[in-house]
Amino acid sequence: MKELRDPAVLRRLLDEIGAKAGLLGRTPRLMEVCGTHTMTLFKHGLTPMLAEAGVEMVSGPGCPVCITPNAVHEAAIAAVTRTEGLTLAAFGDMTRVPTRKGSLQAAVPAAGSRLRIVYSPEEALDEARREPGRQVVFFGAGFETTIPGIAYTAKRAAAEGLRNFSILPALWLIPPALRAILDAGEIAVDGFIYPGHVSAVIGAAPYEFVARDYGIPGAIAGFEPGDMLLGVRSVLDQALAGRAEVALEYGRAIGREGNAVARALMDEVFEPFDAVWRGLGKIPGSGLRFRAEYAGLDAGRRWGMAAETAEMADASDLAGCRCGEVLRGVIRPAGCPLFSKRCRPDSPLGPCMVSFEGACLIHFKYGPVRRARS
Amino acid sequence: MCLAVPAKIVRLEESGQGTASYMGSEVRANFSLVPRARPGDWVIIHAGFAISIVDAREARETLRLFKEMAATDRR
Image (tube, rainbow over all chains, first blue to last red):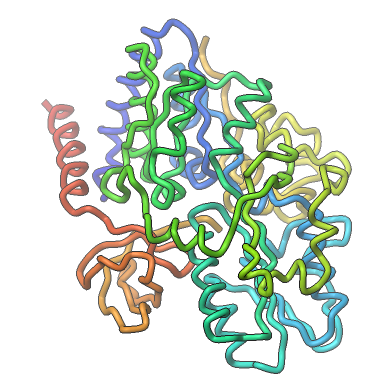
């Protein structure tokens, strides 16, 4: 798909976008919800070029590592440091998040316990199968992209009757978070670039309320530079026509209906609840927890972590970290006094500087953003 | 963490597991979430699970669009 990176075509799309923004007569502000989109935009220099074309891009909450509150990270740290003979399996990014109790990576495990970095939830399950004498806890964090795989793994563990496997859930749903950002009214958003791979599971329908209730256009986009510019162009076309819809600019990889098999699995194992997000607070129906039939797999219950994780707000953030405001799009990373000074990739003070999808790390790596022309 | 990549299915097994080719190397993945996928199909793989089948016709359409834009540009 090198065609989607062809500089001449990208230039042409940027020119078209510039012309459309000019016709709008104002600088539209578009939120790219997904952290991987932020990465594409910065890696290919698109955010500054879009600013020159008169479109302001702002990063949203689409980084699961980042929006998981510190209290949940601390519960995982507590599990591996207080319990003997336990294997805590986690995605790599999750192990580096700094908390009041240090990070998972730097934590000293209890006797016989260890931390294992996995790429897939199934690797954690394999660990439990291989060593039936050890308790294996999988720190299951993710959005709708990741949740079906975690649900599949939970179902397998239940079917096999594995008594030494459990999951600490940190499962988040994107659409309720978008509603929370819109209802907070802290930031005016003229359009959304919806996450391509979350949409591979949930489809287009869950975003329809943004167009219908808020009149804000949006497009589901893929992850090549050309894909993203098609998404931006679509949003501007809608704005110019006075329309608001959920356009699909990533039809090659996903359908408007999403993946019904994946959704059914999620729904079978988990149920929604009012979860607390870093920076966004408690959002109705924005998290998933185990249904009663699968409660035996809930590490939170098994290890008594549930109480710690249920009711915590930003009190657990490290002093001065403004990751929460970055996740809401209210400030850019450079707006945080710690950014690139005390908080750097080798000495992060918050998750946004840790995760590969974290806005602070991406801004640090790929440089400052010029302001949009007005 | 939320990275997903396109890969081409090489082999599917009864268990739902299988292998796919990603940038020249074979990777293991679980294909249970895309029961209609067949060897030779391109899929999007995320955290060890294929979550979506790439629509070859739509992919060709995207390519056509970009090639067309490139061609107009050179005129």
